Length: 177
Image (cartoon, rainbow, N blue to C red; front, top):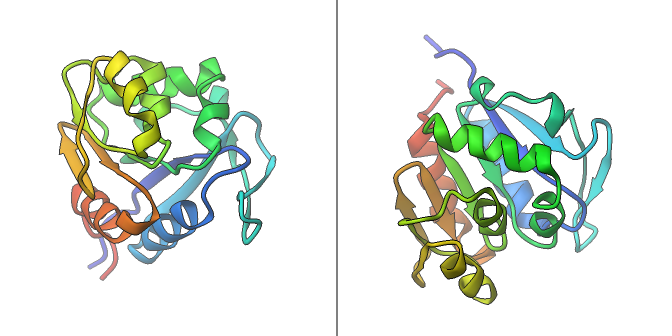
């Protein structure tokens, strides 16, 4: 018997790293879960920085409740720098963190976690160029393909997607047959 459908939030803005969105998104859907794209505005057409894919946001962060989701995924690229400027996105991430909901961030994704103030005392990874931001936010940066600390799952970039996706799905459980 198939388990109940799980909702997974993808926090997204223009300029995301194409594969860091497409591959986890496809894996979540293939896992039998519902993928919900949350951005600054509902109905926004969001383009990847390489221009290979486009997604349309399902909800604005101001309309979303973190407690409705089993996990949150934050793809990298230029998207996190835009997302972290939206107070509703930051509030959503804080709520998810307070509830212990798994938050998976890859590449530049931890920039959103840093802005949300959830890195103090945490060990994580990400794109090497943001390690000072992570340290300034109270986190410890390590250079590994995937790091899990509490409810946070982080990876460095596209080369780490298989480990990132596996760890994320392991945390939320398999929904498909």
